[in-house]
Amino acid sequence: MSREAKFWKQLKTNSRSTDRKLQFTRVENSAGLGFPDVLMCDEQGRLHLIELKTTLANSLRLSPHQVSFLTRHSHASCWIAVKKETKKYKPVIYLFDAADAIALAKDGIAGAAPVAAFPTPVDWRLFFNTISPLN
Image 1 (cartoon, one colour):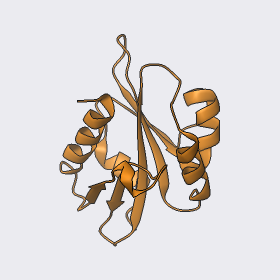
Image 2: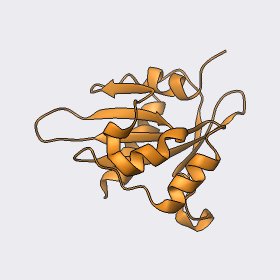
Image 3: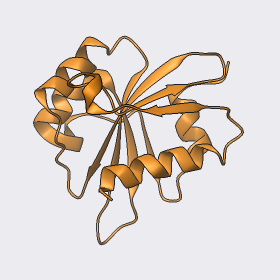
Image 4: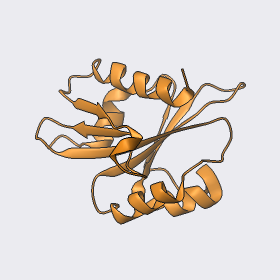
């Protein structure tokens, strides 16, 4: 199983540990080049798009199609969730706004300030509330 597939499984599994009633759809590449990996629907029926990335360093691999999609939809609830894993430190999940896609593709994690950072153990309730605030 790839690191990104494990990240997807972690995200979906841990959503159940919150008091949120979120629904997820894993989107396959056949939906269109650059389309984010996850479609999340919250309790109010609002949709949120999440691009999942994992890295062992500061660099990120965002394709030109992904950068284009994320940039064009940055006015929507569109996110880039990056799980940074190292041998020395516990994993950290960074949440970036889609508007940062160009900077992240160019300079990696150092290219933009994350909206939030979630060290291990991840506060999943806060993670999902950052993407979809409860009103």
